[in-house]
Image (tube, rainbow over all chains, first blue to last red):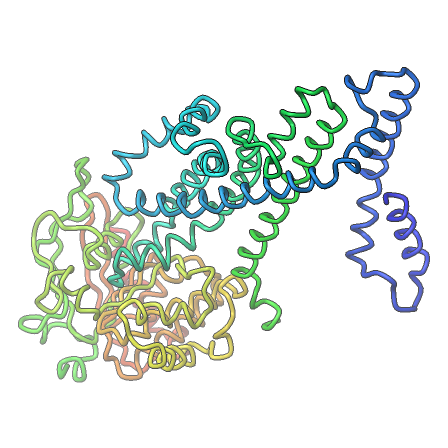
Amino acid sequence: MGKSMASAGVIAAEHAAPRKRFLSKAWRTRLIGAVPPAAAFILFVGLWEIIGRQFDIPVFLLPKPSDILNAAIENWDGLLGALLTTASETVVGFLLSVVIGVGAAIVLASSKLVERSVYPYAIVLQTIPIIAIAPIIVIWFGAGTNAIVFITFLIGFFPMLSNTLIGLNSTDHNMKNLFFLYNATPLQTMWRLRLPAALPYIIAGLKISATLSVIGAIVGEYMAGLGGANGGLGYAITVAATRLKTPYLFACGLSASILGIGFFLLVNQLSKWLLSSWHESELAKEN
Amino acid sequence: MEAMRNGLTGQGRSGEDQAFVRMSNLSKVYPNGTVALNDVNLDISEGEFISFVGPSGCGKSTIFKLITGLSGHTSGELSILGLTPKEARKANNTSFVFQDHTLLPWSTVIDNVMLPLSLRGDSRKESRKEAERVLEMVGLRDYTKALPRMLSGGMKMRVSIARALVSKPKLLLMDEPFAALDEITRQSLQDELLSIWQQDRSMTVLFVTHNVFEAVFLSSRVAVMTPRPGKISNIVPIDVPYPRGEDYRTTARFSELVGAVSKSLNH
């Protein structure tokens, strides 16, 4: 993969003559930029494989990359099912934390009195480690998807709340005066000024919550995961660990991080699109 | 109205009965004891263009805040067409231009200009027509779909002025609107503002500035303010008839008046 990328870059560079180029300039720069990290990755994995073989390290202690790959292929259906379960819990929990977090921030920001009386407790709640209250959540919701989604929601909720609240409260003073002078209602000021102005903050919150909610889902599955076909990655990891199926454990861990990265990139892309549609959307037409 | 048509300075005659804005013994003391404004007496008649000139801290922006109702006075009286600042604001007769253009960065030029109308619930179609009309006036008819960040400082200020004009205000309050612009842009905006205003002179304009040339060029009267405590130390009538053009800046009378205003500033 890394090699083909590198050679594609070289080919494109060599054919940079008058003819129409194979790849646009932006893509070539991107490909060339990807060469060093790809090379480092190949080197790292290769060394790992060689050291594993050379020193005959027991598989249950440190499986070689090839062992991990084999374990993933052997348990492909289980792994994919677990990944999908965790992904759906992550998405539902994340969406809940976004909707409720932003909604709660709007309520808090609408009234200084409400904010002053409730926000300190929100911060106190935030400092409670979720792991510590997870058993209570399991008691309340019962083991299974509901509890896991709730734990995911809880972990993603506070960054959304506090970021949105800071955003809503840092609206430009002159702009607020303007809305006041033109007799805007509080609702108009919220929807047409404060909320759009808070968008960059909300997006910062989205990025934090996106990564946290993957962690939340896996922690939730540790605590409240049900077995069987619908067990998520967290459950698969606990099972693999107790049975010393270390290669599969690694495969699950890697899948979880791929899920995390993928989810983050998705939210990142969404954020870029949201902000750029404000700032740049009309740029092309007018220039 | 009649007084405005007749008198060039708009001063005196209408002052007694029909003051558009009346300040009597107006004072503002901040809670920490700072006297921002001390015993200001001024009647502004309809259709006047009055400037407040003075160094920073002389209370000229405080006058602006009191008239808008952003801040309350501590003693004396302030009425706008017989109404309190708050009532006047609710009547939707007043518009504002600040030093900062205060345009919504995520809204297009036309949406920004339509803002005062849409906030009070006017129909989108009507608002759009009005917005296009005022954008034409400030020479930005072709930029309706542009976003503020794509415009120069001067163009942003033009949009800001268009937004103030869109609601056909009776009173236009401008707080150092051109202070952040370069000299050339500033002069062309002064020309434009003046030509818009002198078309029918139906608007009363209160213009806060620290630029003497600007005040003398635009105004029918210049109120000179001095700091600590902020008060009006002198009122200089600018007895040059409207319509005034660009060439007014190069006349001897202009220099004389600038000299007179500057002199009273230094007292």
